[in-house]
Length: 587
Ligand code: SER
Image 1 (tube, rainbow, N blue to C red):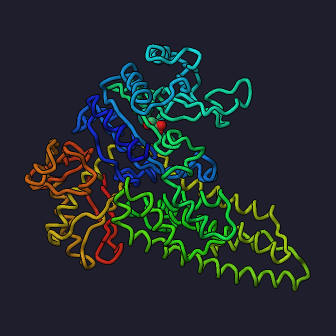
Image 2: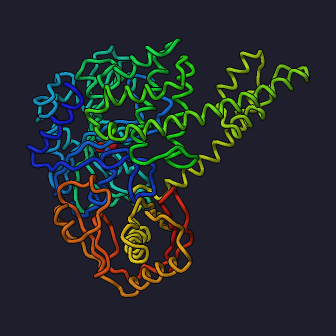
Image 3: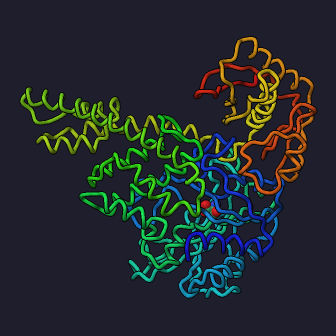
């Protein structure tokens, strides 16, 4: 079975069971400032898991492109990937444990043809007021899994979410495949990471919402959220030991092998994984930079290039690697890779050139310091020099180590580690800030900012003309950021006009209404549509009084009246032809 077929079979199966297929969202979440990337199929569905009705109904299925960079150091083993596809099905207050478990069993057994004797499952063992999930276990027994292959585990293994600090969560039941490896100990079970048991699917029974105060409140509706890792399952179905041996990576890995002079498998896997993830980030608009998503992209690309150098694969051939990936593996499942090929290659080649320059400058600086050390009669570089190379010149410490070795020098590792740790602590504190709101930060303030972007969008079109369409937006509870098309800087008069129009609409206390309709009906009704390709058959149209009508997922305020006073605090260029406005709502 190919990955393409697996995906189709999964989706068709759930469609036959009354689910509607919805499209994958971008890897960078829209209007959710609390996470950098979409890490699971449930991310774009958070408002619906919390009770908002979904235009497509209560049974949904999709495949979602996901990025998880938390395990980046593990990439290179048999199963870790920074980009993967999650197949999923959802019940939004419809079926619950019984039907979910029976459908999972049927799909694995009848459609995918798994040897069901090799399947084990785990259920939640209970904690505090939440009882052991004997209910889920009983459905497994009923479906055909014998009691001996049902394990009860604690919160660490059988509780999912919330994805951020707050949001939907609940006990889950996980499905494992026994690879046939010898057990690592007599106690080896699915909780063990020795590789005997591979998790293939996770059914989360979302019945709680974790609040900011850390309380678990029962959700208005009981949901099911499942996730199956496509790459991992295709590996098992193809009988491969590793995801890197499947059709998804085969051509790329052999190209890397062909072009490298001193091949090693681990570096090849790192290069392949990182390039694949970078390709999908670039398609969704991420560009290398020193902050947020752009920083992760930069880090992945530079790490890939470092490993290319390590296996003596000329970094200038990176375009061949990207092309091979797209033409030989990605094109079928992801036509958007072919469509964006030129841009992808351009962005990657530019970053490669920058990094090579960085390395050259770093090498010069290294040589200066090496020379100095020698003149001073020592063969040791201080940790401070190594750290400066890293911090100021962007020179990776492992490269300094390599060069030092070549030059017969040592360096003060302890001092470097100390400085490095201080630096890491500082940046970690920054990153944690970003996550503090939790995934489901659909707070009142963020919602008001969301409505404000619709008002701003319309006001810009009134003042500047219909060309001033939205090119992006980003919201926090403190401000909004809105990118739009316009050839020139806005004059103070234009900015004032835009502000006045928005404030007038707020003062008019316009009612905000939402209707569901097909994309065609929405267009006919005159609604502005953004990111159209992301939507399925039916869309939601938010109307703000007689002022604005946009296709949008929501949420929005009910009335504009108490949003506060709208104030533009900055207007600047993003790139040629695209301007950015930052604005706040003063209470
Ligand atoms: N949200 C769950 C997971 O990420 C199931 O989709 O595993």
